[in-house]
Structures are given as structure tokens and as C-alpha cells.
Image (tube, rainbow, N blue to C red):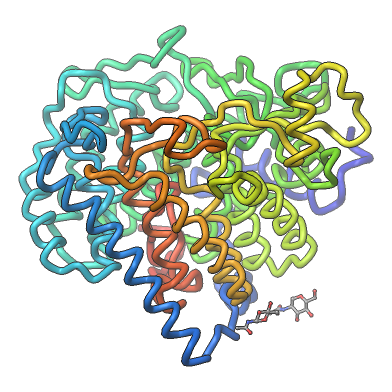
Length: 532
Ligand SMILES: *[C@@H]1O[C@H](CO)[C@@H](O)[C@H](O)[C@H]1NC(C)=O
Ligand SMILES: *[C@@H]1O[C@H](CO)[C@@H](O)[C@H](O)[C@H]1NC(C)=O
């Protein structure tokens, strides 16, 4: 295996192992200012955004239209379910899904702030100040969701508004949630009981967890440590990387066979991978996302996280990215032992994150790859009569024989380039998010137009009295039936990315902020020199 590794990847690999052995402590090697200075000159956003008056007017009009859509959904939530986790947009009933603390309330805060809805923001802030995180609805909580929705939302609300109540609430919750990291290895439980501190998993053996749900704390916890000057949070999150690198050696013929392509499932007591072919979709996605984003948020100081990202990216390019029979580049499921030519809409965050990474690293070749992935992701939306794409989809690898496919799948591949597996849509943001990155990185209005087209179709198909519902079948749209579900990410991500495509490019510039996996922006300008 060694001879095929490029020298750069080999260095990255050694760096990762070296640090995993604990020789440099938890922080890893922290580069000096002059070593990271070159990255500071790599501008992420375009510098040639439109200055045409008529276009600027059109963009302002579109931003206002999105804001009205958001207000429609927010008013319904406030009227029928204020303080609940969600509203069912079809029955107008409050729904408890995420501890009962008000997931939508907290997740929506920064979007409300960014849209300049001042009255709504202060009403929401009042309500947030009353949340008591010591108790929940009595059900076990998902540690990952609690972090990305609540802690991420509170940190962002604090950074944008300067109101310290949000930071106090974020810290109160994080201190309770740290219990979930009190395990044999320090890898967190998937679920934990807020009242008793007992850990568990959602299904299967109690010590089961997955890659995304152990590796999506690093961004929030790094920032929380910076804001509180308490390294506990950051150390707990970074330790997960140490253990994973330390307890798993990539070896051909085993479940972890390719360096940096991590299986989906692991055991938190042993720290060892169990099974689940590597992919970039649900269960894995934000693990990879946080490697590069923590490096950016730290002012390019968390060197080991970058080393891990580079190692993963090398293997992703080699094994996961797969040319389809329609010549598009897809993100499959696989490793050196074969491939499943199936993908889900969660993977569609990756073109945006990859484009961000390639601008941070000034890597034009990777930007071209990211663009190819954007085109296959966008194609799952643009080819549908509704301009809205399915939850998951399959494709035929170029050169493969199609005899295993159903007749209907063959005919969809002919028509669209891919076939629909689960044809529903739950207002997920990932395709829109990636288009947003390309808009900000290139300054090309065509991308904003794509988002406008999707937004028009979301309004036509998903808008209901209670907000925005899901679709049962994106081929049929509204007449195929609606789904009575409106998760909090509709407010934190879907609306934010649509709105920001039409707001001035200075609003949450990618040169000033990093977005969390839940769409919460964290400032990139808070200095980090290796200590908190
Ligand atoms: C980015 O890389 C290109 C070569 O690909 C080089 O010409 C350019 O100067 C680099 N930009 C910065 C800011 O380092
Ligand atoms: C900015 O330049 C890029 C090419 O580098 C181009 O695609 C984009 O359309 C330009 N933006 C404007 C507003 O002209």
C-alpha cells in the first residue's frame, strides 16, 4: 500500500500517528504564526460580486421574499408551538423531539438575527433565558443533536448579539452534556439521560455509536473553550480523534482497510470500528466536515485536524468519488473492497465544504472536483419536475452492466442520470448549502439563480398554514402528498442559506465565519495560540 501514497499524504499520515501516540499531547503540534501566515492570504470569497444596480435591486427583492417566507413559518411556530421543539406544520400541534427545550426556538436564533428581525429576536431571547437544561422530557437525549442544535445555536446567538445570557446557557448545557463523555475511552455515548446521566444507544448494543455522532463536537467545543477560557470542552472533543487513531490501524482485508476512510460504526468502550462501509452521508458526514472546519476556526493552528482531513481526502478521491454512466461524478459508499453505487442527500454538503477547503488551501484542482460534485448534487434537484431532489438516489458506475437494476431504475437513469431510491423531501438544506458556497466563492449570479428557482418550488410545493411541510414524492410535488414534519434545521440551515444567497455577500462572509454542520456561523477572527 505504501508506494501508492503520495509523499504529502505520507507526511500527513505520519503526523497523525505521531500525535496519536500522545507524544505531543492533546493539542498536537501547534504551528507558529509565521507557519500559518500564508493561509491568511487565501481569500475564500470572490472579489468581483455584481455591482449592477438592477441586479442589486433584484437581489434585495429576493432576499425580502425569503424573509417573508421565514416570518410566515416563524409566526405559526410562535402562535401554536412557541418553546416546543417543533410544530407539525399540517396539524399545527407542538411536537417534542429534542428534549422538549425548544429546538426550533434555539436553532432559529441566529437566522432571526441575521434577517434583522429585532422584535422576534428579543422575544425569542426572553424565552431562551427561561430554559432549564437540568431536566428534559424524560426520554434519552441524542448527544450529537443536543450539541449541534442547542449548543451551536446558543454560541452563534451569543457571538452575533453579544448577549451573555446565551453563553451562560450554552455553558450550562455543555457542563451537563460532558457527562456523556465520561466513558472508558472518552468517546461519548450516542444517547444519555439528562436526569440520571445514564448512557445508551438508539438501537443495537448500548455502547454502539457512529462516526458523525462522535466527531461533530469539535467545532462547538473549541469555540466554547475559547469563550470560557476553559480547555475542558476542547480536550474532550479532540480526545475522540486521539482514541480513534490510537485504537484502529488501517489494514487491508479488515473493516478499516484504507487510511482515513473510516467505517460508520464503532464501540465507545473499545474505540474500535465495528462495521459500515465508509461514505460521506448520514452517520459519517460531519466527522469529515469538522476536520477541516476546526482547522480553519483555529486560525490554521489545529494541525493534526488538517493532517487527518488531507489523509481522508486522498482516500475519498480514490475510493468514494465515482464516475456514473451519465459522466457525472458521484459520492458512493465504499473502500478498497468494492462499492455500493448509492448516495443520499446528506452527502450533498460535501461539494460546499470541499470548495471551502480548496480555497483555504489554494488548491484549484480540488475546487474543480468540488464543482463536479456540485453538478451531480444539483442535478438531483434540477432534473425533477419540482426542482426539489430526493432523500436518496442510486446511479450506475460508468462501464458497469445494468442487469441488476429494475426496469424503472434503468429508465430513470436514462431520463435523469440517476434513479430515486427514497423519493421524499424533508426540507433538507445540503444541496442549497453547497450552491451557496459556490455563489460566495465565485461571485457567479447563476448559482444564486439556482437557489431562487429551488425556493420558488419550495414555496409552491411545501408552504402550508403551519410553515413548510415535507413532500412524499419529489416527482409529484404537493399532489403526491405532504409530510407533517418541520425539523429545526429548516430554520437554522435551509432558510439561512437561501437568504444569504441574496443578502449582501458581506453578511456572514466566508472570510470572517465558519458555519457549523447545523448552519451556525462562528467567527474566524478570535485568535488562538495553543492555549485557552
Ligand atoms: C495560489 O496558487 C496559485 C498556483 O496554483 C498561485 O499562482 C497563487 O499565487 C496562489 N495564491 C496565493 C494567495 O498563495
Ligand atoms: C466573477 O468572476 C467569475 C470568474 O472568475 C465569474 O464566473 C463570475 O460571473 C464573475 N462575477 C461577476 C458578477 O461578474
